[in-house]
Length: 325
Ligand code: 13P
Ligand code: SF4
Image (cartoon, rainbow, N blue to C red; front, side, top):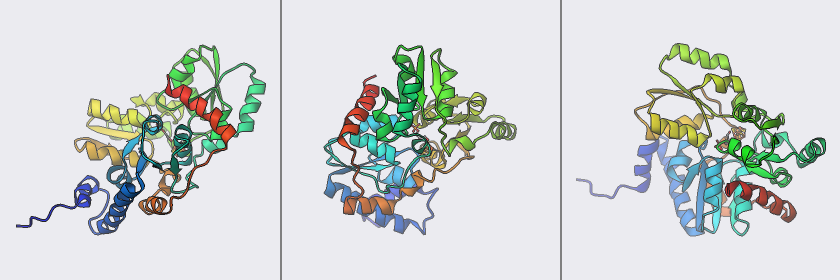
């Protein structure tokens, strides 16, 4: 009888077996072993967004979640080094909350079409155009844009944040569709910006109707960065973690997640009883983060996130105001 202890990576493979062929696993396992060792040596933690690939999400991450959860957890960490397996604005948010820690992003080009849609000067222009109207900024923005804002929000608290300000009118930037979706749920008048998520804007209402025709029992869950017509056609709309929670609580037999592709993969591991119908779009920014780059990040301590002091103080205030709600 073979009494050799099962290697940690063998146990991890059970979680990701549907996504990684057995033949390729030894290559993944070598990277994972090295990363787990480096994390200990560096006193590092890895935060991973729900859109990261299963080998990152299930095998090396210490904390997984949506943007709000990652920001909240970043505020509680006592490790010396934080590696953000996500996109640049998420790493910046972690750095804002942890100015004395070393925050690393494994690929500096991991951006976001929403963050790129607006500059700090655009926000100053909006303030000149709408004097006295508070500015709520989605976390999917640069620190410079956050610094021009009154408060931040994420997809899981946007309406709550908008309503917390006690203003009849609010500027909600930069995601146009998120702003329109929040406007449908609140009596506060929303002034939007024209940013779009390149992943979610591609889902169309006809796609949802076709899915329903093909799968009559289907639960259609969408992210609020989708067009309002798509959200209206869905059974539920919420942040990435809210979508996962819906499945955990309602156990639909068949589900379509209209969001980034790795979401279904990551949740399917926990819910083998649910059939995932998989229309999805890849986020090229999220997919820049790989095991090899995370290993390199921990080896060479690259790439440290730095934020200009004046910007950081004002951006931190907008993030912290959201976190205290
Ligand atoms: P969540 O905060 O819902 O995870 O969304 C982040 C994101 O980038 C969605 O595209
Ligand atoms: Fe940005 Fe959309 Fe990618 Fe999220 S999925 S990081 S909003 S481009």
